[in-house]
Each structure stands twice: as C-alpha cells, then as structure tokens.
Image (cartoon, rainbow, N blue to C red; front, top):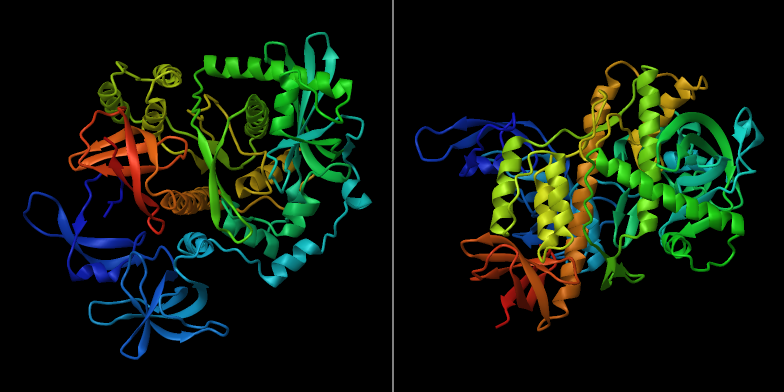
Length: 588
C-alpha cells in the first residue's frame, strides 16, 4: 500500500482487512508495532476508486459470483435486462454493497462482455476496469447531432475567413478526426507567417450542457489497437469539428511570424473559418521534404512544405539549445482485423514530418499560453516539474551499470545521455531509464514551466476534439478575444479540473498500455519456438527482463545472469495475454 502524502514509507497490508478494499481505494491504516518493515491493517475505507468491478462469472452453490482481478468476489444479486450469464464469461457488476469482515460484497451485473480469451473482450475489459465509457447517452448524442453536418452562416459571422490560404492537415493515414491544420504565408525575404488552425470545439460544446458534462467526465479520447473511444460523439468528432478538405470549418487560429532562424517576431490569435485544401499523410509530407513527387501538389504548396521543413530544423535546434529533451523511442502498432483479432506487430517510424507538426504545435501551445498569462485569464496549463535530484542520482548509478559514465544533474546532462542513446547498443534501455527519472506532466490552474520542453509557459490548445483541457483553453482564449461562448468558470472549478483531467489521462494511458500488451502477447504466443534478438533492460536476483527486438515487447528470462544492456538471443516459450506477459528462455 502506497502512503499519502507520498514520500512516507509504504505500509505492507496482510490478513482479513484486505477484504475491505480494492486497488486504488483510499484507506485509513492502523500500524502494527515491531517488525523490520512497516505493516498494518485497514481500519476504514475513505473513498472508493470505482463503483464497478470486472471479472469472470462462476456458479457456486446455486449462486453466481463475480471475481475481480484485485478485490474480493461479489455475490451477484441479479442480472440486468439483456445480460445472459455464462460460466467463465467476463462481466461488469455495479457494487451495491461492499464487503466487510463478516459479510460478502454484492452487486448487479450490468454487462456480460463475453469469453475471457476473446481479444475484443480483453480490450473492453481494460476500459471497464477503469470505468472508461464507450457509448454516449441518447441525450448527449442527440445534442451533437443537432448541429447538423454543415457550418451555418450565423456561426461564421464575425470571423476572419481564410479561404485564400493554402491550408492543409497532416495526420496519420489511419486518422479519423482532424483537429489541427497549418498554413504558411511569405511576409518578406526571410520572414513567414505560420498559421496553426484548430477546430473550434468551444463554439459547439458550451459550458453546462449535457454534451459538456459528458466531455468533462471523459476528459480524453482513448486510442486502442482495435478502436477509438472518443471524448465527443461522432457527430462532432468525426464530422462537424473535423477539419476535412473542401468544407468550411470553424477554427481558432494563432498566427506566428518567424524568421529563417526560427525566432518569433510576433503572434496573433483570432476566430477564423478555414477550408482545408488538402489532407496530407505524414508519409506524403516526408516524400515532399525529401524532394520526391507527390500527386495533386501545386508548385506553390511544394515550396511551402520545403520552407516548413527548414523552419522545423531551426525550431528544433533552438528548442534543444534552450534545454528541451527529445525522447526518440520506437513505437510498435498492433494491427487488428475487423473482429479485433491481432494479426501483426508493425514498427511506427518517427519521420521528419512528425517532427514538423510537433514543432508547430509546440509553438502554438506556447503562444496561446503566453497570451492567456499576459491577459491574466484563468485556464488550465500543462506543467512539468523538474526531476528530483535523488532520482537523477539513481539514474547515474543505473547508467553506470550500462557502462555509461554520466552525471545528469540537469537538462543538459540528460540531453547528453539521450544523444548517446542513439548510438548505444542498449539505446532504448538508456532512454527508458531517463524517462523514469522524470516526474509526470500534469494539468494545473497555476502556470509553471514545462521542464521536458524547456518552455516557460505552456498549455494544450491544439487537440480540443480529444482533450478537455484544450477545450478549457479555447474558452479562455475566446474571453481574451472579446467573443466569449459562455460565462467564465466558477472560482475554484479550475483547481478541481486540473487533477481530474490529469487522472483521466493516466487511466486512458493505462488502458491503452494494457490493451497493447495483451494483444501483443497474443501475437507472440502464436510464435512459440521463434528465436529473437533481445537486450537486457532490468536485472533481478531471479533472472533478467529483456526487450524483444522488432516487437516492442518484453519478458522475463528466469535464471539469466547478464549485465544491463547485454545482447542475448531468446526463444519464445509461451504467452499469457490476460497478464500481457511473454514466457522466454535463453537460446544457447
């Protein structure tokens, strides 16, 4: 059990009082005297982390039980309409009575997900265990559909129209919603005006509506291998707020004047209307940056992309010079078929085109944050505290085990380690160690620097379709522009919204990681006997954990004695998709 406040030594709980709580609950503990480690027992549950439990159904002595992964079994009082019980099926139950030391817990089964071995059931379980909803209530969906599919003249009134600009979107080939677009105008020799145009979700999602309450409750979209669980209903996320080509869309824009070195000479924000001229994929922009032909690209747009490429290089260089960190870790996508069955693992390369959009979005987020701070307008800021010096000392010791002599006491030291990672045989392990030494970024009503980006002012402005804090920032910016879409939030609300959005972000990331690990393990489980190259990433007395080359997966090799960073060959022995684990043995 982790103590609160953090930093106090943790308490080991055993015995009957474990029945009282489940993972994530806040509890009061009585410490037991004596012993070499702090032990205790739960005396009260202060708050529950969730109201539902997920687990398999079993029929015992004429009654149904649901057994969650991290809590006591629940007695099923009844099944909701349409729920057909089946032995072993994974189900979701709403708790009606929590267990005590003498009485079993009870609940009502609201949903039967299906067989435990089905991939879609595993992914859905990852959502349900964290109470991340999928379906929208009819009233919420109806409110979104009520806006129609086209922007009305009334909505465009008073906005700056940008139909003369060659605005384009740049996204992944499998993207469904497009909430950011860019444009570039020449101002003078060596000067350009970068436009970053973001879907104006705040025009439609007004504070206090059912649509707004549901968006706040979700706070983020969840991206899983076999589906996307959006923050907003499809009527908005896939249609009216999506910056599709050749249709009018409401946007909030920031215009940033830049020179060849990437220096900012002025910024301006405005309510706008755009008509995207082209939807580019990252791969198409990469081809253009490399001077190769792409269909349906005018000479002017080709030149615009070339200039964007030069600006990206200048912006990246300037950002790294001021201390920003660049975590270039490989990503692997789990490919699924129409039934949600995982079929392959594909490495997702980080292209220059990705960096181009990253730099432009960072620039826009900084510009809007500075505008809000200058206007003293309350909003949600994205902050990232500096690392704990003790964590950096631990990092130095871990790096030493990899043969790396470094004392990363600040951002410059971390930058040096990350540069080394690109050439080191255990480069991914080096990068992971650096990431673990940092604190988590979070949302806050109080502005503060962002350590990882080396930004003195930062907010999330560029993704309001999928992040609620961006919607809050849009509403604040509209107040600064003198065209509010509703009242300012009540005093104290932002102080609650920051932790709420940070927590929902964490839960979404957990669900995504759990789903990816489960489906990856299923793919690797079909490759029993295959031999892979691997790198040792953690050493324990009972063996070593290794990163499997070409898969993004990892696993434990029991009995392996090796140094951190050592390259080994391992054979896949089996897999446990439910736990997301792969069984390995050393190939001699």
